[in-house]
Structures are given as structure tokens and as C-alpha cells.
Length: 258
Image (cartoon, helix red, strand yellow):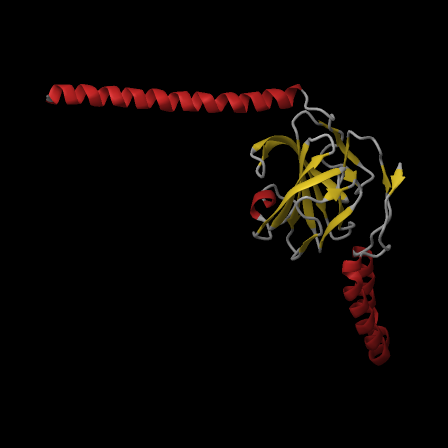
């Protein structure tokens, strides 16, 4: 396993919060003595929330890594709403005690980044994927397989941070974003991916393998693409047939009027 850790043990997003908490707690201790204890406990919570530890990173090229710490709440086949294709969806829910640094699950290239405004319902609920504020990164692996990973705000999360943009190269384990105070990350994979986690499993960003994705499209993906492609001509044929029928009826009407 490779190790990827180009940042300090405390996430830089947390420095202002930690320094502010320490300053307020110190002032309270100076003037209030032991009454400042609750503030020191709050400071300890802030420090643990913004921790950002180094992780071992699997090097298997077919491994899709967890983009976040937390608990698996969804493993299902559904529609990727950003690509409008069938996909394997795996969702990781982060509570306030999990590390909230988000890391890339793949080596590849970012195709585009979509930010969607929304509400702030409990991120543990399925409807959070479509109703909450979220930020979707649409990327491709080095072999060209599409992978979508989406930061979703939670009940108390009020800030999604994303540091990558369209055209950028990303590497597995790379720190690409952060969500403050409770949230989830949804991962959409081609349907031939094999999940290696189940609902309720606890996972760690970068070191836990969520699924295996073949470097080349599998039979399921090929059939799905073929079915989608076949559906378009079928619809077009129906439109053409309807138009021809209407034209014939119009011609007959004109002939009768003549």
C-alpha cells in the first residue's frame, strides 16, 4: 500500500476554528477559572472534528476507494442523476465524530464539477441525495471508466468545499474537498462494478475499498449501453410512423374534400 499525505494532521480548514476556540477558552479560564471547562471540552471537540490523519492507500488499479470516513448507508443499482445512466450507488454517511476530509476514490481526470443548491435534511436519509445542497465531481479513470462522487451537505453542514475543477488530474487518496459538520458522499459506478461493502459497514477514506471496477467495460455495462442505444431508434421509428400515418390521413381528407 502506498501512503499519500501532503497535508498536516489537522485540516487547514479547521485552523481558524481551533485558534478561536483556544483563545476564547483561555480567556474564560483567566477570568472564570473552572467555569471555563465546557469551553475547553468544545475546543477538544473542534480539534477532533478537524483531524486529518494519514492513510494507507491500496494500489490495485481496479479498486474504488472510499472518499470519506463513515458508515455505509446505501448499496444499490439506480440511476446516476448526473450522467442519466444506470449505476451502482454506494453512499457513505459521516457523523460529527468522523473525519470530514474528502479524498479521491480513483486515479483519473475530472470531466466536470456540478454544484447544486438545496436544503439541509438529515444526510442519513435517501432523499438527501436529491434534495440537499451538493457538489458532484464527474471523472474518468485512467482507462476511461466513468465515476461520479458527490459531496452532500447534512442537517448541520453548511459549507461544502471542493478544490478540483474540470480537466484536472486526480490521484487516489488525493485530498479534494471538505464538508463541515455532518454529511455524506455518494459514489456512482458503472453497473459492472462489484461492491465489496454492505450497509452498516464502517469505512475509512482512502484505505477502504468500496468496490472493484474492471479496467474495461463489462457485459452489464455493454448491455446497458446497447439497450439505451436501441431505445432511441425505436422512439424515432415510432415518431416517423406516426407522422406518415398523419400525412396519409391528411391526404385522404383533402381527396374527400375535392
